[in-house]
Amino acid sequence: MKILNLTQHKATPDQIAEGVYDYENHNLIQQLITFDEIPTFSDMIDRADELAKLVIEEGADAAMIGGAPYFMPILEFVLFRSNITPLYSFSKRVSEDTVMPDGTIQKTSVFKHQGFYKATPVIYL
Image 1: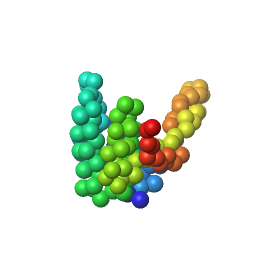
Image 2: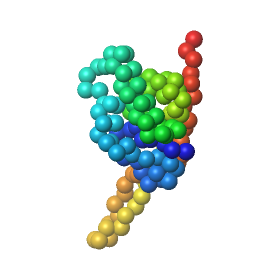
Image 3: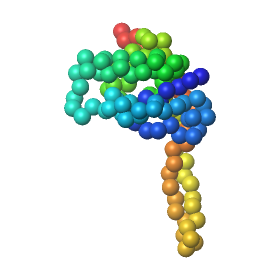
């Protein structure tokens, strides 16, 4: 499966191994999913349409999405409407210890990609 990354962040090696790739102009993706002011519904539809067009032009089957919670349902809808599968990366926070040169241990939290959650079309009653 060919999965275009539509998130703020570059794809991780684990995500890349599962078919995710970054759009050549990742800054454009970031601009389309970032809102500096409260967006209108129309603004969000327009941006979601632009993102779907990019996915189609790239010939991808799916899109890895994530970002502003108020935008994700609209983006999901537009992607479904365009026959593109929206996917959310599922990751776990893993603690890693690194022994420092002075013998102390530095503990860091790392998000490890575990797989994808495939969004499901939801009908609101």
